[in-house]
Amino acid sequence: MPAAAKNKKPVAPMPANSIFYLVRHAEKPGRGTGLSPAGQARAQAYVAYFQNLGNPAGGTIHWDYLFACTDSGNSQRPRLTLTPLGEALNNLPKTDYNDTQYNSQAEYFRQNTKLYEGKNILICWHHGKILDLTKAMVRRTQRFPKLRIGRTNPGLRRCSGGC
Image (cartoon, rainbow, N blue to C red; front, side):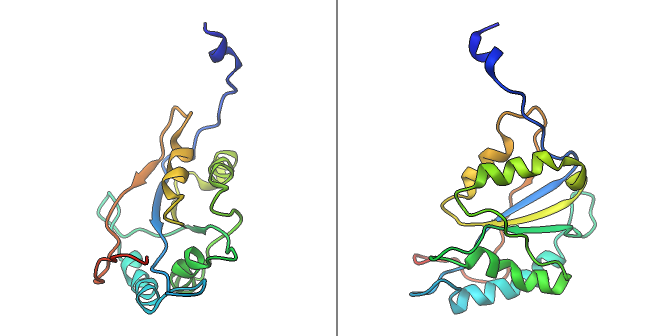
């Protein structure tokens, strides 16, 4: 066995039979840390979109947990993107990790597999780090979580610059 393989610490798997749905935050304004009017419209449109989103079995997804990265001095967009949905579901997003702590967020799921097993989890992250979060969630594990990749543009035009 190679020495590198001997020294690797086993990594706990991600929660089994869970669906993780990752989205980037809504559009940013010209100035400030919040959402632009188009971003606010998208956040509001997400309420109906995600409440009616179908699951692989043909039913409607019940969102058990919402997560967003913490607010920073530069952006509150991930939290603000999911807040209207969270209010509608009476389930506000958990915001324990900043956008660069994607490894910690993934490790949190690994350390709490029983809590999140079989759950539907919606995560909103900064667009510059969302792929890093995805990689952190699937690396070094034998059992990959179900990552749903889809278009989340509920009736809004595509963003062109300044998102």
